[in-house]
Amino acid sequence: MCGIFGIVTKEEEQLGPILVEAGRRLSYRGYDSVGCATLHKNSGEITLRKDVGRVDEVAARLKKAGLRVIVDDSSDRMNAKIRNAQKQKVPYMLVIGDREMEEGQVALRRRSGENPGPMSVEAFLELALREIEEKI
Image (cartoon, rainbow, N blue to C red; front, side, top):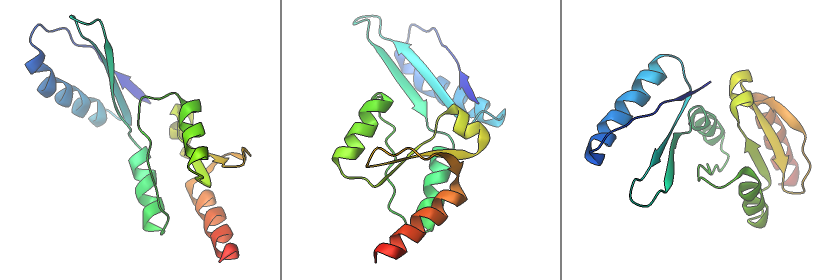
């Protein structure tokens, strides 16, 4: 579940502590990801700040199992992130959106474009470790 909040203030210096406190309060209420968009009054530019929530937990579990993990938490669109990972020859891409977070799963995409779909983190670990062992 994602919590969203908005703040209106004249003093930009006040934003940091307010955003941190709002994010902390939402996480205590069970939200696993937090996002906040700010509008800059001079340029009209919108900046998105987000907390990746459970993605870090999944990354830590995969690293503990011995896999190399890179979390792309940039503001690029999902298609651009997948395209960049394919260009870098990343063999497995795990997509963790709101639905996957709610269900405790990851959606696997392979470099080849194959999309086996959602699975548990444990199922992905078994699959990846087995395929790595077979290639060694």
